[in-house]
Length: 251
Image 1 (cartoon, rainbow, N blue to C red):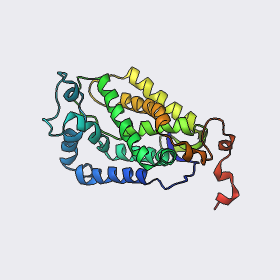
Image 2: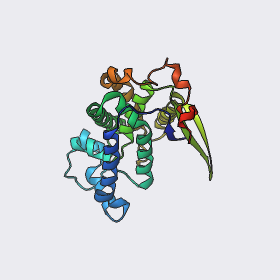
Image 3: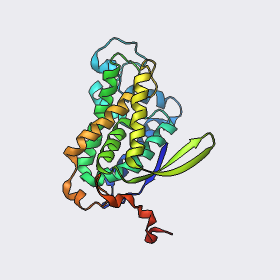
Image 4: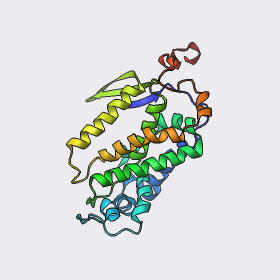
């Protein structure tokens, strides 16, 4: 289940969302070598978050000592990625959900919200496996925070999703609460049934980021900005009607 777009227009230009998308792309190309050569592995080891470095646990290390402090790596890790699909998948989710959350907070608040969510996400994974010597990278924890905030702000907005079956796919319009509820349910179930040993997907980072977003959004949202937003809240029935059903939006 992959989101393609939402039917939730902006009131303001989402400059921070655009900047985050651009920064991740720039880091991927110029710091990580676009996934080619030795730059990918070295950047992951240098800037990734390693639980045992922060918590002082004695797991087996897979990377040489890094010059990036464990505390700073809580931030740098969210701008590193493990491959093209990792990057593109994360950026798609940020593209779909980030602009409207930024619209609800303002630019600076959204940036702080995003970074705090990413830090909490990394710590969540760290607490789940404090002895891990495997570096964790990716923006998905911070984006999980954005998705949690989106759920609290715009639960009834329609999201177009793509569902794949081998080479076939279908698109559906579903409420945001259904798509995001399914996503976080998968993260929780996967976290409970998958061992953290040996690396892989950081499900607890996703879960921790999402839950933090559900909570933090109440401290970061701007009521004045939301007062002008057509699709805010659970009770606004206007969200039941797609903006794409308006003849003025048809090309």
